[in-house]
Image (tube, rainbow, N blue to C red; front, side, top):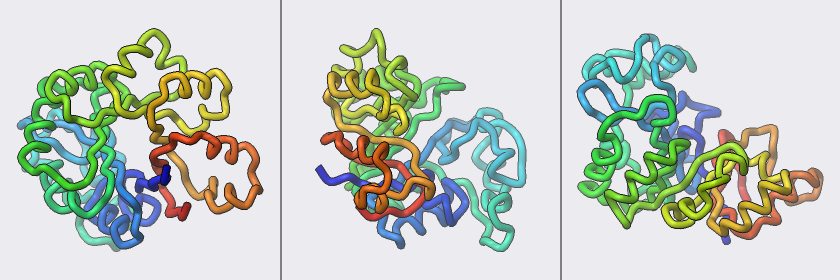
Length: 249
């Protein structure tokens, strides 16, 4: 199985995360796909951003749930990364799919409902997905297993992945995971734990691993310089790695 490399929040090592610049950079540097995050605004629009509020990534403040799209558009989402970059408006999920949905092999869309479970977000996600029908494989992932259960009730066609830290997050719901999910998304370091690896083998679902950066060179893995990380590559069902840096596998 070819391991796809997905740009974490776009190519966030060289461009402000979850912005058009970061997604364009991922396209230019030929990532197989991108990983993004979506929240819902006060006026029920889906926007591409990681945090529940905008303080860390923009020159504004406030929670997404308390702001309209029009209000969010006033803030610059490149200002905290590099003031020399062009003004970056927050993107809607619809805008992202229209612009990049046919340019990547895979788009891993994280539904950010683990802190705030926005009412109706899953239905709205699938309405937008169905309207645009992108060519890319869209994988909907979440730390909130309830969101995935709702997504599965809405659509049998949706590709779903359970996002978690280690095997303990899966205990007690293994059968549900196998019934509902197409993928599992563990933290890559958990792969080195035997209890984790045994459970992942038992679940027997393709793996999307998060999140690598330049400290973990995949090129070094293949040259045998890091035995621990080579252990991870022994797994035959790794579908993708989510990375801040560009690696060639």
